[in-house]
Image 1 (tube, one colour):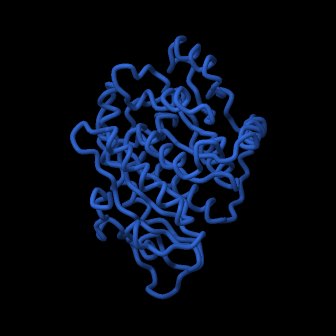
Image 2 (cartoon, one colour):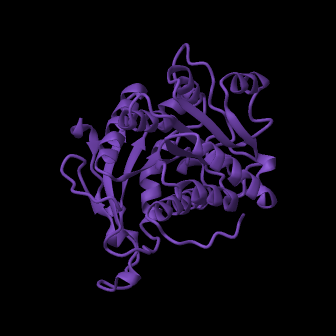
Length: 327
């Protein structure tokens, strides 16, 4: 399986260097390690990046293509950001899973294999998608790690339910229905649902499947205390949590480079607050970001925002102390 992971080219991780020895001046590109999943020796204060170059699910869902370009683009923006930790906190890049042709299911299986291996090494998976079909491979890896009986809570920051029928074939719009119908020990919570981004049939199916959700209009600074309480309640009822972010949840003014942009999407400050809240919890194992589309972006705005939000997750997982005034 290891030969299916493309190693990351060192040049992707590059940027300004203010000092060669003073760690307080370091940026991501100066501390990231390039590792191989079977040989890397980790500690429990390590985040492990894995890319997922796949948009076959988006193609099947009749979306706009380009998300497969995101893992490399996100790495390039992450590389420029300051690194705020001591040497005990580590970041390793394990490479990228590539979807060959239309072999979506095989690519998701490969991603799941790598996520499981990362978790078994006591590292935190940080997955750079890809279309939102990334979430199914992410889920497979987490479920394989925790076992069939553990209660898994899936928190999705998204404008859409992604619970369409998969009778003909899975896509980037079917993953969570696949999970809920095939795994009785998984539950699903979506933050940022658009009233007019989902058909009534999908709302009915969400209710039938027991999905917990919050509308985007109920997620602004004045209501975040209530939102955080609901997040806490959901987390308390599960043994483990995985977090997935679909960037089409963001307001199109901030994130034009996505497959399905949202004029009434969330403010980045709200999304940042949710990421910080969720990833600060001990039960949360992993994070993925999906649907960044560099081909549709304007002046790299969405890619940069995606990198900043990923940085929030990494910082929180590693125990960074951030002053969050958004709730």
